[in-house]
Length: 213
Image 1 (cartoon, rainbow, N blue to C red):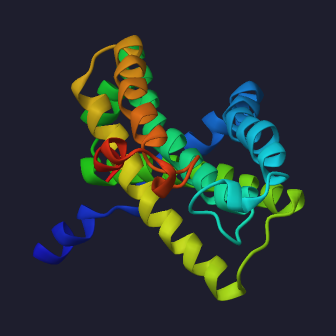
Image 2: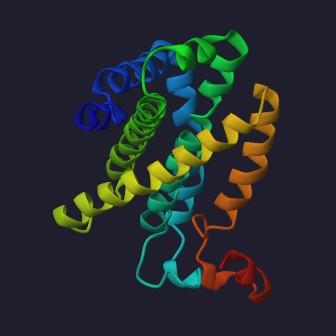
């Protein structure tokens, strides 16, 4: 009996079902797919490319590094941040339409449901991030090495897991989509702009560096 109960803690079927549902929901709405890539592309095309023609020595902290090479990892991180945290919006949506209640009363382990949702959100976020990586490489960003690329993927997965989990936790505490979006924007935008993704921390004023650290 204990062995059966232990197996039910992680049930592959509801995990796969919830993962597949999140994937279909993402891919079915073409506007969402395109919209999720517009902001990263905007930063790369209208900030990264023009600034890359500026001599690196004019930006403190970028000696010997092109600005586009510096910006690209930050934009990938931004993609993971926004896509991961905003995956919690699907929980709010399911709350409003009663689907979440039906899932919770189903004879499946709740941890498996949460895990499936998390993996679905992580997968969509990783796909978006890899698309941005491909576009950045096409723009001229150079990868340091193959091993470094795979290490970056591992870091992306761990980072995405944290952001997705954070978004789901916030979503479970809120009852409407408007409140969730407002709180997420209030949290993720300061995190992004204070992360040093757009400009080196060394180039910031001393008082701002303390906040960024």
